[in-house]
Amino acid sequence: MEETKPSGESAGKDFIRRIIEEDVRIGKNGGKVITRFPPEPNGFLHIGHAKSICLNFGIAQEYHSVCHLRFDDTDPTKEDVLYEQSIEQDVHWLGFDWQGKLFHASDYFDKMFEYAIRLIEQGKAYVCGLNEEQIREYRGTVTSPGRISPFAKQSVEENRQLFRKMKAGEFPDGAYVLRARIDMASPNMKMRDPLLYRIRHAHHYRTKDKWCIYPMYDYAHPISDAIEGITHSICTLEFENNRELYDWVLDNIPEQFPSRPRQYEFARLDLQYTVMSKRKLLQLVENKLVSGWDDPRLPTIAGLRRRGCTPESIRKFCELVGVAKANSSVEMSQLEFCLRDDLNTKAPRVMAVLHPLKVVIDNYPDHPIDPTDAPYWPHDIPNTGSRPLSFTREIYIERDDFQENPAKDFFRLAPGQEVRLRYAYCIRCTHIKKDPATGEILSVHCTYDPETRSGTAPSGRKVKGTIHWVPSNALPAEVRLYNHLLLMAQIDADLDFLSRINPHSLETLTGCLVEPSLKNAHAGDRYQFERQGYFFADPVDYQLGKPVFNRIVTLKDSWSKKQNTPKLI
Ligand code: ATP
Ligand code: MG
Image (cartoon, rainbow, N blue to C red):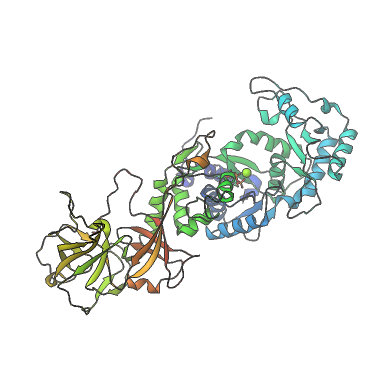
């Protein structure tokens, strides 16, 4: 079908929104739009789910409607109420609400059973005793048709009795399955008598021990959608071939549902240098390769929150990535762009030194002179606010802002060389003191020029570099820097991803120094440490007297080849 150019209201909308627009226009489902987000509570949500949440809840908002939150709890062996709680928290944190429409697939287990009986009675389903391997073998291949199961000829009565016995717990796991009778020669493998129910003697966290047969996703999903009156059932592309079965289920169950939902597929979000599947994330957590589901290195929503990302930036990222029909993997730099863009106007600028080097200003008095009023914001941000900043005789600068034997293009501090200190003075290095045993630089000695105080009339002095610093009463802090979780942008399915974990994905720096004004910081506060990036006072480990900051993102694309320290304006 040729795609027609959208016009008017639907111009610029993605293909799903254009379909919805048209459905509303022609009055399909009474003009209603109801969506759902259907996570399986078998792990924490990741940023891929955020994309689905933004899409489903976003559409509901646009149509003044509602998006249901439905837990797809059809596999009791992997699911847990703790995961449900985390999912609810994450959806809320992203800024969405299900308006009381919280459901579970298990709410409909009775109905699903009843409909299965009706399919059996119509000759559209049968109980099959082939084992897993035989079922696979009978199914055929993409190039050859399958064979009809010997159990397919059983009478309705036999099927009904066997299915009831399955439910009554008379058979062990795997002894029988309920299958739809469709077409073993269908070009769509999903239509070759797919499984509807399997036996699983497992305790379910909600239905307890009531059931020992559980419906398959392809059967449970369309029924749950239809019972809830969902109009547009949006899922990811890998379900494209399941759509025919979705429709078969709804077309063959003799029931008047409040809506006739349709399934639409969009490209799943895949982010480079990380893993995006709950199964893999669970492996990382269980093998203690990360500190938990909320480890800031993970692409989980809980991890992103703990790292300090804002919900606004995640929503913006999902919007930027867009809703497409073709899978692609997104560069981490896109997410970082959204983070910087959002934090730029939210995070006040302060100074922190991550690798301190002591500088002694020999001609500066021992007692502090009047503090400078240092603005929290650069000129191009329309926010106001400042803090007093005292200059002291001893200060600390970043170790790599000093070079004993400077390269030609090194414009920061070096013997005989002058540099400007942010919000303070120009200083010139006179000499250094070294540890005679190790040769390590213990302190850098400088003189300052009182005429160059920041905010006073320009001294006419040309100083090429400006660096940040903290005074002698700076506060010690721990700083956590995060890098890619994986060493490779993409991991082939047959590669063991656990062996490709970046050993430097977390760098913990102790002995950092942050400026004294941060004594008033609280857990959950965000700052820009000038020239270093955006940082977040860790919501769990941050305590007064022991500040811990997570780096949310650097100030520029740190994944690009050049790794220069950003310049101050
Ligand atoms: P995973 O493979 O990570 O466990 P899943 O698809 O099994 O994901 P579900 O809990 O079934 O996880 O997903 C809930 C919803 O989120 C589904 O509609 C699914 O299509 C969507 N979703 C999952 N992963 C992504 C992704 N990477 N991008 C976009 N949507 C996703
Ligand atoms: Mg799944």
